[in-house]
Amino acid sequence: MPTRVLVTGFNDWKGVNGELFKCEENPSGLLVCGDLKRALGEVDGVEWRFLRLPVVWGASGLIDYDSYDVVVNLGLHSTLEKGVLNLENGAMNLRRGPDVVGKIASEQIAEGSRVLQVPTMSAIVQSTSDMKLPHDYTVKVATADPSNNYICNETHFGTLTAVASGRLTAGFFIHIPQAPLPELCSALAALITHLVVQIGTRGE
Image (spheres, rainbow, N blue to C red):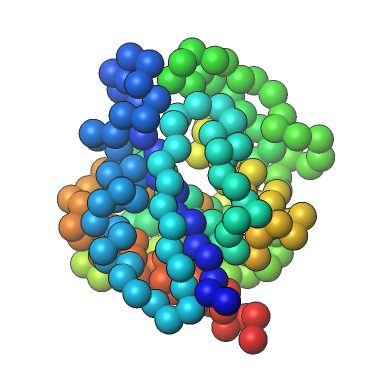
């Protein structure tokens, strides 16, 4: 049975006017529904699936975790320097700010500790630190931080919760910069493929 991998990205924030599924600017959403499908190509034993999420609180609720083995979430980090992909190590149990429809959150996501980390995921994430990717991209490991409390973090928290409960084998969040899409796409495909292969290797 193939490893079922879902890759998600987000739709636009600016000028949505209630159009939750509009995506003309956000590179994470553009890549998920475009070139990333082709760049990932065929990998033995892997079945790729793709999904765009709206920038709203509770977006991770649109992911049917029971239908996949691995979930890789992508999100835009507008101040991240070009040539860097941030692989998140853990998620904050916190959500704050307004989403695209004006819903404001200011609370813990769930009962429990301030930071959610899954040891098996943290080990894989940390092993990629400073990994070199095509087009001079480098992987940086981003430790969970209270300032990272928006919808990307909430989505990663939901994914890690699914891993911790056994609904998923693995889950990751990659923050990407605003950068030319062809080079970014190639680097992302290499990192995602590496992560999925690592899961398969550790499971043998």
